[in-house]
Image (cartoon, rainbow, N blue to C red; front, side, top):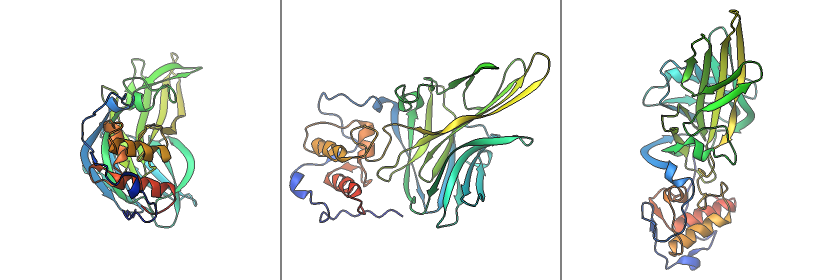
Amino acid sequence: MKKVSYKLSAVALSIILAAASAVSAGAAQTNSEPVSSYSSDFKLLSSTVKIPDNQIYFSRYNTPSDSIFIGSFSDENNKKYSVKFSEIMSGGKFLSLPMNQKYKFSLRYDLGSSGGGSSDGTFRSYSNTGGTYRKVRVKLSTFLNSEYDSKFASDGSVTNTDSTYGSHTFRFGDVDITSDGSKYYSGMCVRSGAAITAVTPNLNGEIEFYVDTAIGSGANVCTDFYTIYKHNDGRTSYIGGGGSTGSSLHALRFGDADSSCFVNVSDATKIQSAIAGECSLDNLQKFVSDVNLDNNISIKDVTCIQKYLAGLDY
């Protein structure tokens, strides 16, 4: 589990802003500094979940109850541990992973006679991912913005074009059956630390999911596609293998106070400036700046970020 300490001996910051007043995490803005482009499409929700080390927490938002998609973890010996999205109840579902190993995550689908999935091929340890996870709502096209991931439309859909079979818009609602009988399956989940949330964008292109509140932690969108295409002459083509597991939700990274998509010394400086009244933080920046989770932006948060950057326990 993450250890948090507020002693100032390791990083002596008390002399910098000892007299500065703390800024409430819910305080209104006080100056004309522009808000981040992400802020209006971000909302912190009330739900919180505690996840122990070597546990994976699965939840879902707006997904079909009969989803064919699966969240799967494979160790370095290819032993698999999986949860079907159709098995996730309203209260979520925990998956236990044996300790002291690394695991590769895959978003997979299972149609009985066929299956497959997408993975970034990275093996990760889940021995120190335990902690507090908070639910948020974001608009996909904002956080996967055009500078990085231009494929996502404002309604959260993705249009893929195949050189042989043409274009189709995937909406991540599991299966879309067209008038000619073709079936287009698509699934999406968000991976943040030890939290996996199966999601389908709502009509506004928004998703809700749990995000890790450890400094430096962010969230990645994972997608997968599968098509059963009907030809005019009655033949059927099976098209799989689409999707991605590496699309980062930019600026949603704990400790990223200046919305640069990275955690560095400028984030500590941003919080110091806010405490001194020299600038304000918007609602997203307040969320990622409250790294000690006390609902108050203060020198303690600066200290935690400084310790994180120095490689110390915070």
